[in-house]
Length: 356
Picture 1: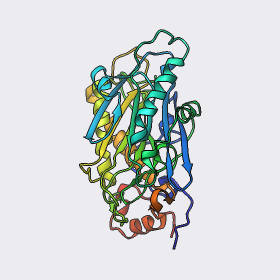
Picture 2 (picture 1 turned 180 degrees about the vertical axis):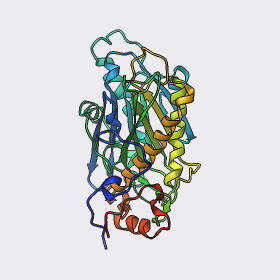
Picture 3 (picture 1 turned 90 degrees about the vertical axis):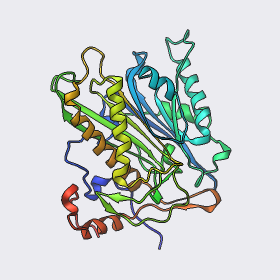
């Protein structure tokens, strides 16, 4: 029987990851000035792909933002990664797409940056573009993404709750035996000196493009999935924060973002490109957060990425595409039943809402 269910985020299902406070949207856009836009491309029977843009408005008046990178496994393409790692900064929005469209997206992003007011004499731009392979559901060799699709994602970027699931760069992805996609979440914690506000509150927001293998676990409980048609195929995680972190500290946050994939069952296959970048929007007018006060930031990243990955699956819809291949959405009922039947299921935050 074909699955019929409305997309719902983890918390709408009563599944709560961790104990830390979220931002108002529980999304990367809870970091002030960060916007998200998608272009979703569904054409005929064979094209299921798109572009997702994470746009920090702070780049409108600053040449670059401090940033860090962690590569869990480098079997992927991330344009701009070497300069990011070398200089510890990003100077463009971060864009996500499909593997063979990476280079067209990067070219379009460069054109976009060169056209911005005040950049008439710019002679070097380091575009940040990452990918996962959506070739199971989309004709990846067709490389259907155009500059117009890239510009549309950038121009449509907005605050508020971003679309999740089978949208943008997540249109044709699959993860952990189910339909994957785009997911987002956030956490807030109270820091000390070097925080972004007078109240000492720091927001960490994440957005993921899930497309990797393994056995899905929800709050530590295994969820039986369909056998993976192929291993690997990658995950990209973007972490934004308004906390004052330097590039080295941001690399440490990015490392925890990749570690969080293990919480939902990633097998970290050798054919998977697992990348995380982290950037800070904080004004460069004070010292970074002291090393002794990083633990809440680490915990916040781990929780937010875990929840974002679950959202990417729970918000996805069953999709049929290239070659008649199908990726099935994970059954919410199956997940909730597994949680109810698992001893100690409440230890990591599940709240039974009586769903059956």
